[in-house]
Length: 386
Image 1 (tube, rainbow, N blue to C red):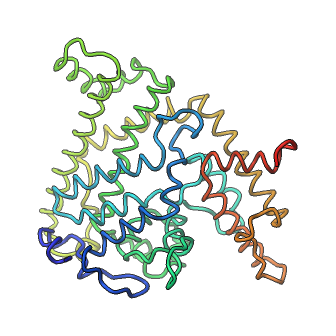
Image 2: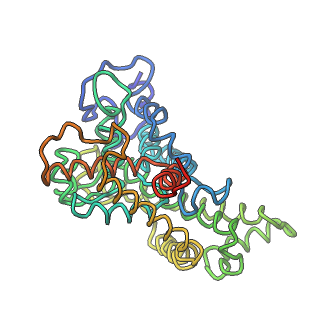
Image 3: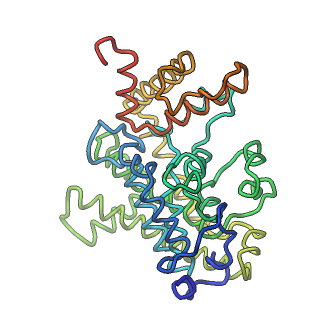
């Protein structure tokens, strides 16, 4: 099955037959490639379902049409698969990485992650990429033979797109590339950049929908203004959200086409012939210098005008307090935790016990959706809640 489905792949793409495999050996599927199995396991996981109620910028209760981590992950997967097909890379692997890359995110977006990292500073810290790997390796409980999802090595390495050296040294083979300063597969590189393309586009859309961004502001960004002008020329008299969607679609196309052309040229110039040579090369998936500059300008615009908007700051400030107060009360009174998150097996008091309990609390909080975190906070701190 795998040989037939993957016959069209470039020699430097990841192939099921030459993969580093799974932590626990399993019989090969007769109907799916190994990376199709990974994708399917991710889709059926508890962590993936929770992404429906975890947000990007806006907290879940603020509106039904804003992006969630789930819709974002689907958009990343769509972009990544399209590019992978053009570059003859492994689409199934790219999709699996894209769907799993945000599994470890806390409620309330980056504000929640930053707050939990501060809470965990004396207990090993908190990195959402590490948490994503922890979910697929350990926390998911779906199989009798092993903890986690037992994903392929290349899927797991793609999920771990960033990692501190301290943590990399604890991870064995999966963290070795950060120590050796080697590259991940082209599929992992691709999913990483597709993530950036997706969130720049949909954060503009959500920002305009919320009213926190104004069209007049965006027209001061040359890249947006250029594509907006093309839409007006192509569809005279077009108004409303259709103008925005047409503009964003053209912007995304420009990034994707540039990424395909630039990556093709880099791969050809590098003369890589297999995955090992990819790992020992420089990063080969990327944007041209000019388009990279446009992306940086868009990121700066969004940071200054959306992510740091006072209304977003108000919500993120409340979100941080929710995370910090939950962590503190659970550390002070672990008996308030659900039984699965209490360290009953640790009899002796001491630093090791505190670290273990803190990590379990971080697992519990990171797994919460926005609405569950708010409800749990009310249960614990509001006297009229049960």
